Image (cartoon, rainbow, N blue to C red):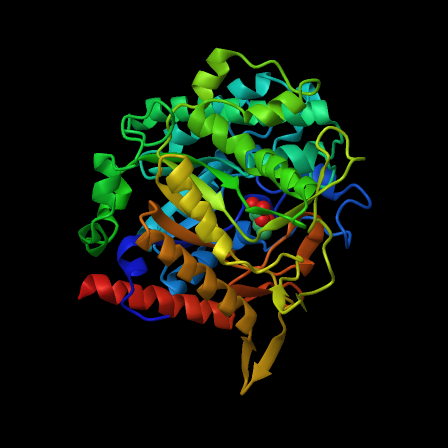
Length: 503
Ligand code: FCB
């Protein structure tokens, strides 16, 4: 990639991402309560190789050392998530001081290292006590409990943390966790799943309201009632000045931004048949528009909602008004594209999304690289999504909050040094970043980019076998972290970008 390309000027924030249950371990330490993922991962047969997040990368006990990894990469920002049951072991009420203290120390370490913290308030590890008491997100009571939790975080960390992501991938949490039974809490019920969809959105909205009260009001840029639907609010414009960067994050630290992260992927028809094309349209409404439309247009996608008449929850106008409360940004997690085909036997939806089966390792099919998750490498997809945000949703500020790839990495010893040669991951990141760059050049409102992930970790239903990290984690050898070639590549990418601002 050429060094002096527009992406470096426009893309101010570059970082990496992780999530609490995937890296922290220490599940019984310092008063942490149980989460739905503790229960699910200990349920026989749920996680492929029988792994759990009990130890994970032991990040809870190695946090200081892990911040050094971020420093080595030279990132501007770090996206991590906060484990709700560490802060509130019962889900509400009593605050576990040791738990909140851990995140407070993490934030201090990051700021000390010149790295802007981007915490996610909920990345799926719901306190088990709330699941047990009222079914978690299946019940509207979750909205208040989630908002209370968010408010506590705002009060305790808001003096130093200005960037907040309310919920990670509510689609995955609702659908994989409540319809397909492959994630916690392991339900298989379409009525529950759609209630969870609605309640995650309401919980997000309530958290935004509370956080704004604690952190002070910002001038939000999205949503049907936003003052500046183009995203060119005074705050987002000033955030784009290169000068802000040269001042060393000063600006970033001051500007409050609250958003939500969605997993989006372009859906293509499996064939050109009319039925498959229609199936792709429905699948797009189901995976992408199910969350984008309520948040940014104040309504569920009509055709899909009509189809789900018998399944969908009661939704009031007031709900939709709250859900579409403007936010400061939309976070997008994108890895691949999917293909949809018509299947009569699939009730209600009548479409089937391929790519749900996970292979042993990466492969090439018809000349196209697939990752070890079986995900097609399709960099143009990220461009398509960003253009779609520009053209169909008023060009709100967007962060790519996750992008990355799992490959079967091997640790090798060369001249007494441990190395991981992962050219496929370097190619992946380079090609996706190029497309992000192209989108920036074509007027998309991109504010930042985070690689998933800082280090290898517990990849949910796949356990530890799928490695996404820029650092290799040697689980067998004292949890050693080894920078992969892709880590060196990302470090150089960031360095070259920085030279631009300094010159
Ligand atoms: C996303 C999740 C993240 C990680 C990546 C690979 O869906 O948000 O935790 O597992 O996929």
